[in-house]
Every structure is written in structure tokens, then in C-alpha cells.
Length: 68
Length: 68
Image (cartoon, rainbow over all chains, first blue to last red; front, side, top):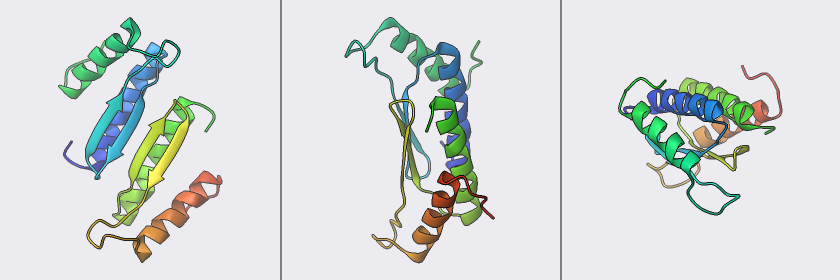
């Protein structure tokens, strides 16, 4: 990300997608502009279809695409 | 925090305070409602007066107080 505020704006959009999916990743903003996101299903102890779907939508966001 | 959206709302307020202070902490939201925040001045390799000031304002936010 370019800076702190654009990183926060991105995380806000990620959070909106997460709410839509009903699936909540861990979010991190470090060094004022480095964002990383962890997606994991704790109940199964692994990666599920829901994780992949959320990841794909976040990936589209990060690429600046529209997310529907 | 109670849930993911209130955690994000809190981080958003923290980010606004950080922008006002021109000092940007590391932000983490884990396990959908656990927020932790790291405040550190990398250039000096330690804790400075600015860190303490930002910390005090974030602490006030966390207690639900008004932050001016």
C-alpha cells in the first residue's frame, strides 16, 4: 500500500467483504503501510472452501477490481 | 471488543488519531474480535514521548472516552 490511510481504507473494504461472507480473517497493518491477512478456519484446523472464496475476493480487492 | 465490526470501528478511530499525531502504530485484529496495537519509534529503536502520547489517546479511546 502507499501509506497508512490507504492501508486502512483497504482493510476497511476487506472487513466489509468479510462481513458479507460471514467469515473473519486476521488483519495486520505493520510498518505503516504493510498489510497482511490470515485466512483460516479454526473449527476445522485447516483451509476450507470458504477460506478460498474469501481469499479470492480479497485478492480481487487488492488488484483494484470490483468485488460483487 | 464485542465482535469483528466493532473491532474494525475501533481500529478506524485509532487510525484517525494516529493520522492526527502523524505517528502510525502497528494494528492487529485476530480471532475476529481481539485487537492489539504496537507503538514503537523505529528511528530511535525505543519508546519516545510521541509513543506515550499516542498510547494515552488510544487508551482513552478504548475506555470509551472522548479524545480531543
